[in-house]
Length: 304
Image 1 (cartoon, rainbow, N blue to C red):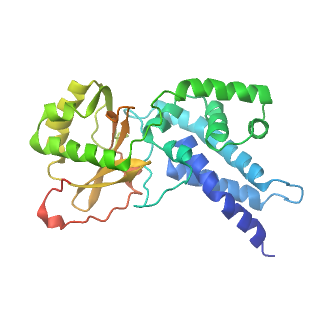
Image 2 (image 1 turned 120 degrees about the vertical axis):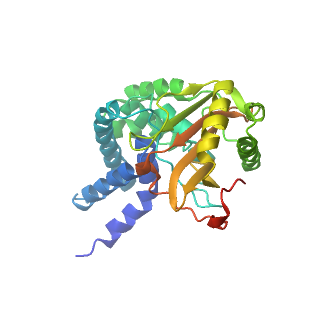
Image 3 (image 1 turned 90 degrees about the horizontal axis):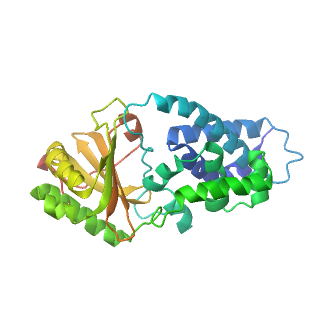
């Protein structure tokens, strides 16, 4: 017997489930697994008495994510070097979520702030503050009292609600910053690059033990500028570079031949300077990126 109505209901809710799972887990592969497990649960459940399918599916997906986070914590202990969420690529000109607050919560900087939270704090905060679910519904999803739920959200908010935790400047501003960033690399000018950086800027790389990457986090405009110009500038010289949207902000993708070898995401402070530079080198986290170069690949490096 066909279950078209049940499938239609699930497909309607799927985008929300994917958005929740990706924010919870920082990995599209893990998010897809959580959503698939949710679908299988939906298929094998007697739905006669389910009055609110979306709430049911959200609860199942949240619990799948919480289970995954427990296992991820054990794996993270053995992770080589700093961990950065998998880059999420947006198609040019598209907005993955029309609500600005939700879109800003996809930035790499914000996803890393979520890492400071316990799994239940993360779930409570996302469901309440990003997906605007009522406290009583969030409490039922997490199997806690409403008072306990409010406490979870309050504690989480103190960690992630900094003044610039989700600040995203205009696309024009980002384009100007990235153009100046690439020009600084071309010219080898640390002074020019330092002018783009916040004093407290941080640079971190994720190779996951599968690609060469810096094992510590650099802090400070002078140190970061020297590393970018003297080290990354030299390493990137034979690469072709394209600018595209990653996690809600302009980012860079570097090609060596036909292979994507690096993705770079950026975070900004309230003054529009670069506060974070995230250098993704882990090939497992680059495999989903699909970029068609707009220039002749035989012409050498692309800086634009």
